[in-house]
Image 1 (tube, rainbow, N blue to C red):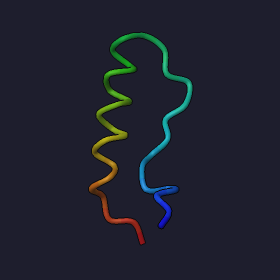
Image 2 (image 1 turned 90 degrees about the horizontal axis):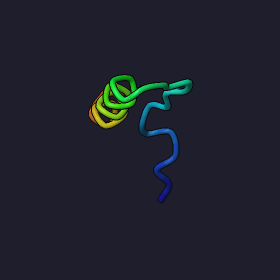
Image 3 (image 1 turned 120 degrees about the horizontal axis):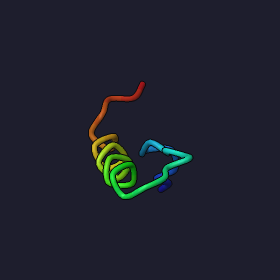
Length: 35
């Protein structure tokens, strides 16, 4: 079983606020419907 590609990748993140937002976007992407 592979989990590859199930979560969003966010590149070029700089600063504490951007890191926090990127982590939330990444974690929440696990619950999105992807065809």
